[in-house]
Length: 511
Image (cartoon, rainbow, N blue to C red; front, side, top):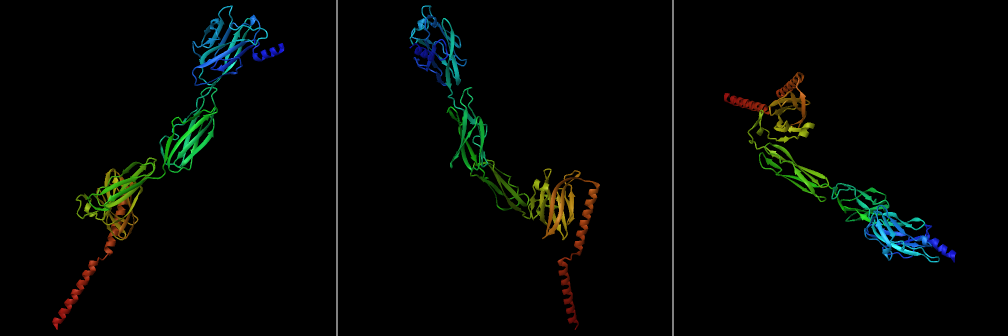
């Protein structure tokens, strides 16, 4: 019988040789059962700790005179929330920040008396409130003092992690409400579950992307963050978010909500129109720029200024459009300005504006820089710009092998043989500004290449230009001398007819 009691006592002791048994429950007073420890959620701000001390020590020397409870450093005792047993008058309570202490009030009354042989034990319970918000596993140390020993024992406390992982888009990948000219979307999500040394471990992130056609999701298992590329997407609006969960089952979605991304790979439409297609000099020409986009919409539309109709020639008008995804398109149209025969009184060198009845074509700076080639008829010219001043190159005469050109503002005339390349200075400095090459003469047109240059004028280049001009004049003079105009043949025929008629009349009168 004694051995059975000793076995029971040793079982209840667990660790302490002084035969103390600690039992505890969550939030309710403990009874005689042996409790393994406390378990609270981190979201509970006030936790009730109720600890039962069962004194199975036999005899007066085993009377417990003091009970000290030491809290972990991360716990906070809530003042005036403690108590002991059914009769608190037997105990004096004191405390520091982390140590709660109960001591017997008089020598006649002990906190917990020792037991008699054959009795299970004497017990009482101690309670208090404390907060503990940091998840993890901790120990509360309960130290009992009697006449012979001081015995510490630990009670486990589990503060459960109830905080969901933090999950968010990493910066602007992708940027919210962005419009992209792509067929893919790169998504970068960052997740974190490091809210305490004993917090749950991040388990996985699930990415969700959807449009009107359906939902795609991809789950990635990892410990921090990941980047994923959704490829092969069609144009349209997509919605993206992500969910992360930890190993304790806490779940959270992207803190900034769902991001909306629009894919648009189709360029907008641009339409340039000018009316009428052909207009007289100085008449009114109306040009319009029309834009449309079926994807993200038109972000900007611009057009070149409607060209002036002051000079004859072919003019161009360009309409440019860009959508919100960065796609762009342009459209160019043209119209012709025809001379009236007496319009314009200003002179350009040795010719007037009205002389150029075949029109004036404006050459862009880029075309002039890269060399512009044009087949020009007699009375047709091009306009170029040098240092913001307009200059003209036009054809005023042709033979089979030569072309006579007029170069102005400051008037110059040059005769070029097919294959000649001449240089001209028009800006009043020491450098040639224009290079002109006569490529061919076909169908009563001179094929001419005009290019912007900046070459120093030297005595040698002056001699070379003079020689070329002399050769051109000689060639033109020779061709002119060899040509017998049609009127000469007509005049000769008429004279011959008159001579024959006079001869016949004279012969008849003589008879």
